[in-house]
Structure formats: C-alpha cells, structure tokens
Amino acid sequence: MKCEKCGEKAAIHLRHHKLALCKDHFLEWIPAQTQRFIEKYQMFSEQERVLVAVSGGKDSLSLWDILWRLGYQADGLYIGLGIDGGIGYSAESLRLTQKFAQERGLTLLTVDVGREYGETIPELARQTHRGHEKPCSVCGLTKRHIMNKAAIQGGYHVLVTGHNLDDETATLLGNAFSWNPGHLVRQWPVLEASESGLARKAKPLCRIYERDMAAYALLRGIEYIYEECPYAAGSTSLYYKEILNRLEVDRPGAKVNFYVAFLQAKENGLFAAQADPGLEQLHACPICGLPTSAPGECTFCRLTAKGRKGKSD
Amino acid sequence: MTVKLTLRNMEYQVKGGMTLRSSLLKIDIQPETVLATLRGELITDDEVLKDGEVVQLISVISGGSTPNEM
Picture 1: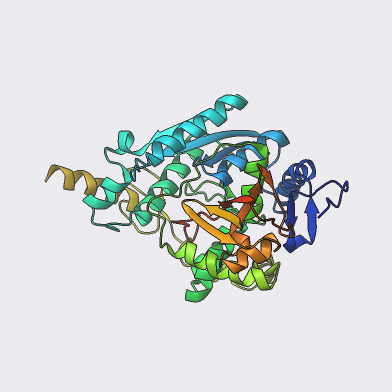
Picture 2: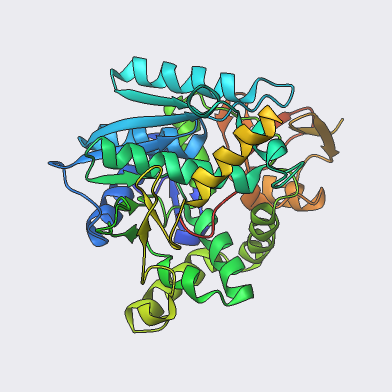
C-alpha cells in the first residue's frame, strides 16, 4: 500500500477515511486534523493558556505533543493516583510524564492524591466502601475535582483531555442505552465554563480514532505507559469499545459516523438543554468552594471526609 | 514454518501467505484494536506475511473509568 501524498510505502491505512499515509505524512496529518477540530468547535486560540490533563498514556501525551507542535501555550497536569497493581502503575506513569515534559521544556503540575488528601485512590475506595475492588468511580470523581480546581486556580482558559473518538463513542453508546438526558445534553467537544466555578473543558481528539492516536505515539517515539490500569479489566467502557470495533470491521467509518451524526442531531435541536436538570441550580460547596448540584458539601469533600473518618476509626 | 504473532504475553501462529488483516481475523483479533510491526516498522493490513516472520502486535485500546461526562 502506498502513501496517497507521496507514493512511498504507507505506514498506516486509515480505512475509515479511505486513506493510506507514510510516517512523515501521517505525523503531519494528525496535528492538522486536531487543529481543524480545535477551530471547528472553537476550543481555544494560541493566545489562551491551556491545561492538559496527562496520565502518562498514549492519548494525553500525544495530545500534549500535538499542542506543543502547533504552538499552543499548554501546561500539563498529572494526578498521582497511588495505584500500584504490582507493576508500579502510578510511579511509572509519573516517570514517563516527567520525562516527556523535561525533553520538551514544558511545565508540568503534579497533584499527588495520597499526599494532598491523606489517602490514595485505592485506599479512599476501600475506606469509603465505594466501589470496593473497583475504585473507578472514586477515581473519576477525584480526577474531575482536582482537574477543575487546578484549571480554575491556575487561571487557565480551558482544561483539555485526551478523550479520543473511541472514548466518545463508547460513552455515547452507554448514554444511549440508558437514554440519560443529562449526559446526552452535556456530551460535546467543548463544555463551557459556568459562573458557579466549573472550568471550561475541551476534547481536541474527540474525532480521532484511538488506533490512530496509538500510531501517532509510536511513530513520534513517545514513550507512554503501555500497561493498562490494573483496575480497567472488565470495565463497561472497554466492553462498549469492543462492540463498536466489531461494527467497524464490517463497516469502516461506523464509529465516526455514529459520533458525528449525534453531534449533528444535537446541532439540529435534539437533546435540548431543558432535558438536563443537573446544571440548572448549582451551589458552592462550603468546604472547597467548587460547585455542587445539591446544597451542602460536594461529593468529593464528603468522600475525603468519610475516608479520613474511616481511617481514624 | 509459520508466521508468529505476539500480543502482550500471548503468541499466535498462522500459516504464511495471508495478509495481516486475514491473519488477525483468523486468530479472532479485531484489526481495529491493534497496530502491527514487522522488523520494527509499522505495517498495513494488506501486507502479506511470510513463513518465519515474527509480527509484534501492539494493543491500542485503553479504558476504565471513562466518565459519562467530563
């Protein structure tokens, strides 16, 4: 198979785009696509400061690399979750992220959950009896809280994450199975900031296939954590991704068509904002000051207080 | 002689002469979920694999607590 730009041997075949590219042209094509979506969804400009949530994985490090190559002012935020899983998962993720930032002279902010809140993610899940063997819900809640706080306190224009097309379609499939109106209303490449203290958020890779992001990391020589989070096995999102990839084999482009058709339907008025009760009334948490849907302490502050209590009992 | 394909700590064998794509489907691996390298270079799914070659497969799917909202 030949590169459609130069005729050299292709390194990758993008069946969903009916496009084959060599290494050099693929490494130009991915940033160009990312730039296209940054502009299309009016995510941010070169004059605005961006905070990239980085995990040490292929998507977030590649996104940071792309933004850096495109000339954006992008700092990184790494959250130390304290997950070991017998493979030193968090320690290795941090090492790779620090190495990446140092090599490019980029600014990396780090928040260690154990040091900051007294307990790691697995400990918090255990102490609070939330999730038990699977601390994923505690992890998601904690990361969202810390990311939002860091973006607001740091004065960043936007918080960006490395969610790719496969992440978005898996989420969409899950939301569609449950017809969750609130989640369907809020699923979009950009979430605007709220006056109550929610940071602006954007997902520049939302229309790029996960496989293409892995190829980008590989061809750019980005060293990322290849091992999966020890708690990810059996997760619902992986199950939905598997289903969608089976569709993709028979119908190339099925995933991107599913997602783009959803975005177009939303633009045409489907899933109106009135269907989302969650954002109507937000209240400031008396502990951390960040917004919460019900009066009183937010879920994160209740979680960490419960964890501290459990530890002292 | 066969073609050897490795993925993490798994090893698969297929007969030579098939394309990468056919080989993956033969061993029930969704082509969308992996990248393949041969002698350190990425190869495309139409590459015909020859007996004795060793193809390294790289899993590209990660997941876990993808939140319903961000």
